[in-house]
Image 1: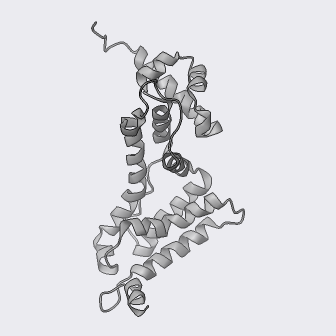
Image 2: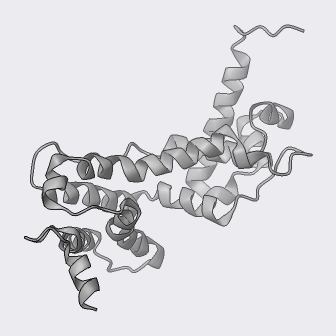
Image 3: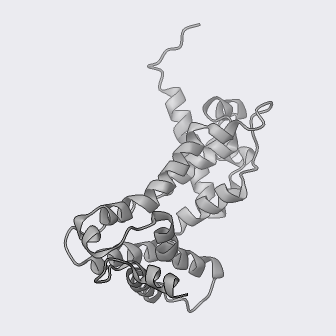
Length: 219
């Protein structure tokens, strides 16, 4: 039987499912986004949900992807420190006020275990929705820093930067602040310390080596 691709109903039902899942995610976190809750909120049948998403995990991944804001990009002008600070401080504000990306990362790292379409035990592992979420998170981290680390400015002032280590040094302390739930955690102060520590470790010395390399040799 041919399908009428001009029929707007599938698009509307998918939009209602995503809207319902997003509302539940915002109000109750990932655990609130169940098949029953979503279909009830969207007023859509379970069979309809599974026509669009092979599991509730895929629906939740799509909802997370829609909630993650664009990555904070660095200003085009300014010193290397100022440009890095602009990114890291923006990250600090995002993590402190609306840590959607941390929630998504925690959900992915702990392993989604929500309701799946029967007889598809690992359908979400390679689903487009899960891949899209992982790619969005990777882009969120890498894009702003790649702009700086690939610039002539960084080439002139820094030794070769391990991007994974850089992310850990610059963003890791901010994530710790959120996870620790410390009431007096000063995100902006930590952001400044993270940038200054990173620049100290990777700044070129007169002989072309970094401070971290010098300290490793001395040890």
